[in-house]
Image (cartoon, rainbow, N blue to C red; front, side, top):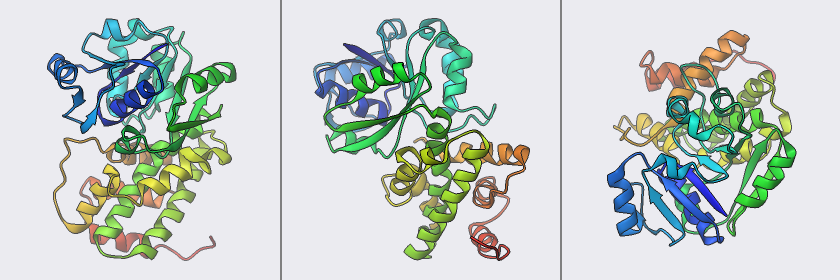
Amino acid sequence: MTISILGAGAFGTALAISLARSDKDVILWTHSEKHAEEMQTRRQNIKRLKGIALPDAVIPTADLGLATRTGTILLTVPAQALAGFVEVAKSDLNGKPLVACCKGIDVASGRGPVEILKAACPESPVAVLTGPSFAADIARGLPTALTLACANETIGIELQKQLTTTNLRLYRTTDTIGAELGGALKNVVAIACGGVMGMGMGESARAALMTRGFAEMQRIAIALGARPETLAGLSGFGDLVLTCTSPQSRNYSFGEAMGRGENFDLSVTVEGIATAEAVSILARKLGLEVPITDTVNALLTRRITVNEAMEALLSRPLKKE
């Protein structure tokens, strides 16, 4: 069985390594011929996941035609680049099983990965793979559990069998809306939690913010059609806990740097930045109150300072939990 992964960032590479170690042949696509040649020659993704060898079963390539000849295709391109990518590649993708592995909401359209893929590739069954997972941990063979969401349960069962590996245990759901929103919304909360820790406000403040952030995630997701139990699972609460408590999280680290008044290297993808803007727009349309998301968005667009952001959250009206 051959599985293709489109996007040779850290997470795509980690998935390729895990699948290859579980006796799958994997094509790992990158848009850069130079990058593909380097990975093939050095047997590492030095650019994104240095120090971890690519198994022989991983075939790096910049040939999109080759990469889309397989059955199941995983898309690990960043959420804000997904719509543009599938518009260009849809003739190669349409009809193939597609699994979105990015976490975010497209700021231009307000759509999640599933809706984007369905619009471009109407003949493709579409799924989402998400949950608490750092690329370095997966690539090192450390265990975790993820959510595989597919509206078609029969196809979901088959994908679950294909994509489960020795260190990735997959749980299945048909709630694609809840799964993709959990993965997207927790990034915004992670930026806020990083800011709290960067300012030195302490663990208790972070725990309180995570809890209120989770309530906000549920409010948004349920309004958009998600099931509450999905948000309480791996793709929501599980990913929230991981992302809000570890410096391995790019969203958390970005928030922490802001809280300290330090610069952050934005050459790495921080999905929560665009997601905060997209969710603020969606919430206004739905008439939802999302104070954490709105505050993070105002901070990122430089309408308020870090101190003003914390003051705004702490001075909100008293209310029932």
